[in-house]
Length: 275
Image 1 (cartoon, rainbow, N blue to C red):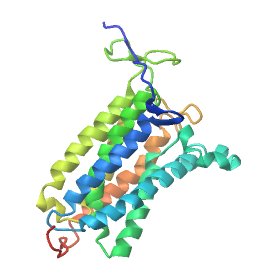
Image 2: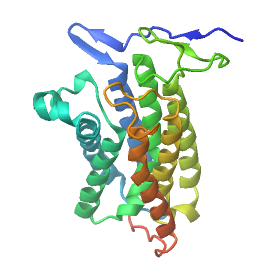
Image 3: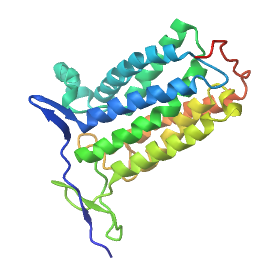
Image 4: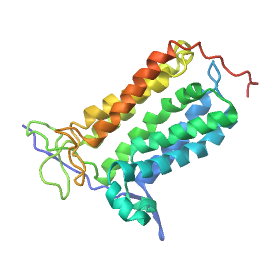
């Protein structure tokens, strides 16, 4: 039997310049958006072409707003609606923490709908390219959660060699942030990138979006088995958490997109000059 590991006390502030501080959590978002933007610029040019690089550049702003507003509003509505409705000024204080992936995903979906309508692009075709890189951001975000020592896991059995002692938390815990970073981030990103580089997959608009939604729902629901529910929320029904409940519509939508992608005509790309 191995003794428990002790949480390494990371400084949540990555860089401090006078009164200005840059936190690891914020850097995770910035890195994910920049790296995702660069990857999507390459993916949209693969046959069938679904957008220009310039359109991807424009969408970066839309995606950023969708993530921030959707993530924050989603957290307020899904997790603590009573508190935020009675303290509305707290909603805009994002520096206190509190972002929901499911809300952020909904925000990006709305941004995708509005953006593709404006530029008359294939919603599913463009969405396929964007969702391919989302797990990159998920993985970085979960690593930032670990750095912050937040969203800790449930009590781990004594035989688990990597069970961890967190500061101010009773008992050795599962490092569930790392489980999520691995499954929701690395594993799902690898699967998405492998599929996205196959033309036979890219031609079926909606398939990649469906794989992402279903894959995330499965990974998140599994990781929730090891993650301690928020103290102010607890379990919703039996041992089911809010995160698992919110994954149900994602799994249904993902399954539908996968099924529907083979019923639709193959995607025909845009005709644009090479750049």
